[in-house]
Length: 175
Ligand SMILES: Cc1cc2nc3c(=O)[nH]c(=O)nc-3n(C[C@H](O)[C@H](O)[C@H](O)COP(=O)(O)O)c2cc1C
Image (cartoon, rainbow, N blue to C red; front, side, top):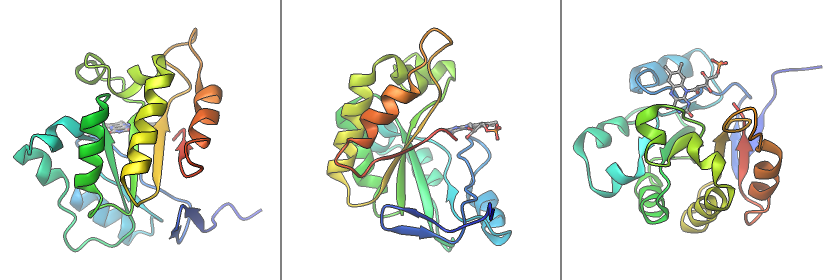
C-alpha cells in the first residue's frame, strides 16, 4: 500500500497527503517555507482570530503574510461568533487556498470565549459556523476537530456527519 498519495480537498489537489498541522507560535512563514521545501503537500498558518481580523488588528495581519510562499496554503481561523467568522473568512479568502476552522484548541484564553474546542459542546453552533463560512467563501473549507470536549462528551462521529452535510463541501479532519 502506498501511504504517500495525492489528495484532493474540494478543487485543490495536493501533491501528497503530508500536511503541516497549524501550530500557534510555530508555523510562521519561515517554518512553512522550510516544510514546503522539504516536500509537504500543504502547509497551514497559525490559528488566526476571526474577531481580530474583523477589527483589523495589525499583529494578526502579520500572521497572514504569505508573500513568496509556494501554494497550497491553508489558513486557519477560529472563533464562535458567526458574524466574525463570516467576516474573517472573507478577509482570508484571497490568501487561502483552503480555509480551516479551528474546533480543537483547548487553550484557556480561547475556550473562555467559547472558541476552539469549546464548540464541541455546542454542535448546532459549530455546524452553523461551518455553514456560514462555506456559503460565504468560494474556497474549500475544512474543520479541525478533537474527539470531543472530554471523555464524557465524545462527539466526533455526530459532528463529522453533520459537517459532511454542510452543502456537501465541508471536509473535516481530526489531525
Ligand atoms: C505548540 C503547538 C501549537 C498548536 N497550535 C495549534 C493551532 O494554532 N491550531 C490547531 O488547530 N492546532 C494547534 N495545535 C495542535 C496541532 O495542530 C496537532 O493537532 C497536535 O499537536 C497533535 O498532533 P501530534 O500528535 O502530531 O502532536 C498546536 C500544537 C502545538 C504543539
